Image 1 (tube, rainbow, N blue to C red):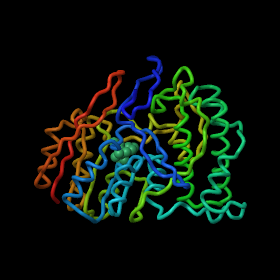
Image 2: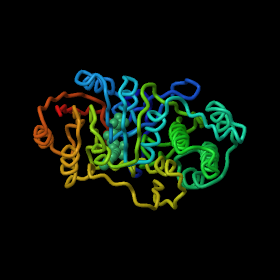
Image 3: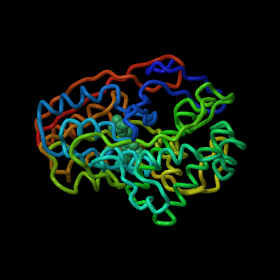
Length: 367
Ligand SMILES: C[S@@+](CC[C@H](N)C(=O)[O-])C[C@H]1O[C@@H](n2cnc3c(N)ncnc32)[C@H](O)[C@@H]1O
C-alpha cells in the first residue's frame, strides 16, 4: 500500500523503480465543489504542509510568500488559504499550470469567449469535455497502443479532451490562464487512470485496477484567499524579483529529474505532440534541467539564490540525505543571519517495497 492508503501495483524491475510515500495525492476542489486529487508528485509536502505553515506563521503572521520551487502549488495553496499573497514558480510547464489554477484565479474560470460556441461557465465547459466521444490521435497511439500508460478506451477520451482544448486555444476561444487551468485539469484527470506506480518513468505491465476505472474530466478550482502570481522561470529569477516576507525554498534534493519523471504531464502542459522514444515514451526534445539535481552545481545554486534574494524570513526545506551536505547547508545559511532549525518526519520515496520515512530539515533564517 502507498502511504496514502492506496494500493500501488508492482512495477516490473526491468521497467523502472517503484516509488512510494511522498508522492501523495493532494486535494483541490472541482468546479462543482467536489474534492479532487491533483496529482501524485515526488517531493510533495502535502503530508506536512500544515505543519510547515504553522512554523512559518509563528514568525510571519501575514504578508507575501515566495515559493519559487512551487511544484503543484501545495505549499502555495495552503499559504493562500492562510491569507498570504503567494508568488510561485517552477521550471516545468505542468507545475506552473497547476499553480495557475490553484493560485492565480479569484474564482473558477468564466470561459467568457466559449459562450460563442454555446458553453456558459465552468460547469458547462466541464460537462462538455466529459461528454466527448473518444478519438484516435497522438496520445492513443503512443501511450495506449504502443505503450500501456492508459487503457485504449480511456486514452481515446483523454485524447478527445486534449484535442478540444487545443482547438479552443488555436481559435483564441480561451485566455492563457484558462488554457493552463484546462491543461492542469486534463493532467490531473488522466493521472487518476494512469497505469503507473506514480511517475511516468515507466508504465505497469498489466492494467491496474486504477487504470481500468473510467476516465472522467474534472475541472480543478482555485484555493481561497488572496490572488497569487505564478511564473515559469528559474527559482533564482523568482527569488530576486522583489522583497518577500517569507522566501520558502523547497528544491529537489537528489538527482531525480522532474522533467523526466513527469515527461507526459509536461508534454500535455506544453500542448505539444512530439516524436517519442523508448519504453517510457520520452519526447525527443531537450528536457528542463536543474542545478539542484547535480552534485557539482547544487551548492553554488543555493548560494546564488540566498545571496541575491531579499526576505524577512528565509525558510529552506531540505532532506537529511540531500546532495548538498547538511553541514554545508548550515554554514551557507548561518552566513545569512541567525539560524533556527526544525526537524520534520515525512513519508519518503523508496526504490524498495518497504515504506521509509525521510527526516526533513526546515531551516529558518532571519533576514
Ligand atoms: C521538491 S519539489 C517541490 C514540491 C512542492 N513544494 C510541493 O509540496 O508539491 C521541487 C520542484 O522544483 C522544481 N525545480 C527544480 N529546479 C528548479 C529551478 N532551478 N527553478 C525552479 N524550479 C525548479 C521542480 O520542477 C519541482 O517541481
